[in-house]
Image (tube, rainbow, N blue to C red; front, side, top):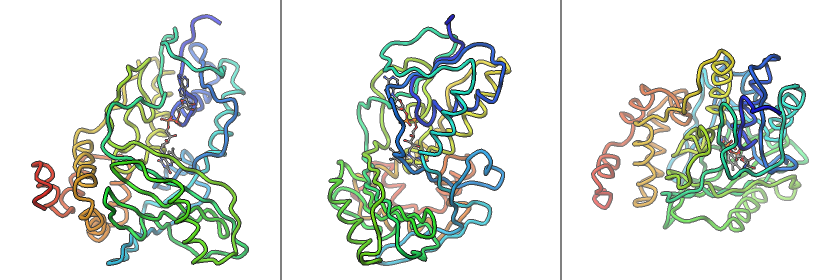
Length: 354
Ligand SMILES: Cc1cc2nc3c(=O)[nH]c(=O)nc-3n(C[C@H](O)[C@H](O)[C@H](O)COP(=O)(O)OP(=O)(O)OC[C@H]3O[C@@H](n4cnc5c(N)ncnc54)[C@H](O)[C@@H]3O)c2cc1C
């Protein structure tokens, strides 16, 4: 092949999404190569996101919920999205759709390889998971997907339930109805050190047994330690995209929807001859996320009440916008709705005064 037009390093969410969007154009200005060491794609993740009706065709939710809960021993808040719904898409379906489109395009080629040097191409995008120099907090979770022998009757997404502080951070349960008899349960910790995944798995089972006795079978698991609020150590081999490119929200871990919108806009720009630009991360968001992560690290005991306060003072739609990566006006609204004292003292480096 002549020098490719586009070379994408990493065929994960960001890389496959960009190639899939470019596959909508039968006549590209040149060839596209996408390199990834994976030989097969497993159903290894469940992507969740808030979405508007106008985003349905793009994000393709397989299930959706209009309400979600945040609860602790002290409070239980049910939030309802008016224009935003909470959508769920399985990684398995996402990968299959993208790979079929890419493999069906005569100018695209997937290569099973691990790159360590910048390839030669007109435009190179780098989505390798970043090597991290330092990070503030680790998000650890263990997810158990189960099938029940009768409907679970859960109609809300349990976003952050039984939210509590631990010595090193916060812990909560995430329970996601995937259909009327399928459920994903994930005990999650945001902590200064990676949590014990086996202990989180035991919590999943204890909750499932308490709720449904023995009326479920385990179908699948997913687990990860995700760094939050990190500095990248290794140089990029091209334009950084995906998590490496700052498309995952530091304080929440949501990134799927951002990557879908970025991919479609970038594909459009590329085919019309505009040079691609690095994803612009918001200064205000990174400052605010930094403060929240500092509080989790230094004063985890105050964090559950901050989330409870946000759940009480923001509408469902405003909360949804905050959890994704959106506009400056949303960030300002959230700052104004947050309990001021912990944020101001954390900003001044005075967390111990809270
Ligand atoms: C279990 C899990 C669940 C998640 N759930 C959600 C969710 O519900 N909602 C949400 O918004 N976000 C979620 N995220 C966060 C984020 O959306 C995902 O992590 C997403 O996969 C990030 O996309 P990416 O393209 O940056 O990285 P990845 O999807 O990880 O892709 C990176 C790719 O690079 C490849 N690679 C690595 N090294 C090389 C190399 N040297 N050369 C070539 N290729 C290489 C890897 O094999 C991989 O395929 C989740 C993350 C995890 C881990």
